[in-house]
Image (cartoon, rainbow, N blue to C red; front, side, top):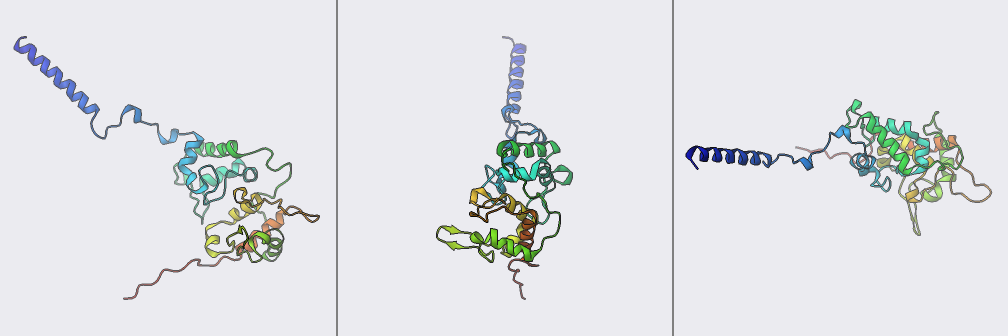
Length: 247
């Protein structure tokens, strides 16, 4: 091999090694690791896991926030309310807005994917058993005085006459009138829980689990009044104030 041929061979090898080195440079994403744009994610399980599971539970229940895997809740909320809450959040609570139009990270399509996905995964056409449930949102102010009476009939056996919870035998319930709890939950959240119940915790829905000749479901007004009574226990500044540092 002459000198010129040897030089060309060495140059070709150098260029090949340089190219391989660039392709495997630290920090350069590999083809198999490259994903699509966040806006292109439309799989319900992925969207739910990334945006909802931390508060509402891995499978829509047993989380810190209201259970979404509750067919009764989904039936009364319907897709339109789910979309609105996901997009705009709930002011004054820990539920943030997810819609891009209000500073969130999800497109309108992804919000629709979440709402429809919940209905498909956890909804049931027979959830209400042909009965008419109280409206998702109240349309008139409630009466706390009447609400205390309704609470005594439908709720006190599990939550105590004062709403501070009971601890008897195997039944242990927390306080519904604790200022810290009431500071974190919205009026709509309370209404949704009263209507839809919390099946993963054994709480019945608005149809109640009363037995006997006087057993009946709660009326829309009784739900509204009960929520008003609970809300009447809110305080202006819940929680222990920070200690002041003195010089």
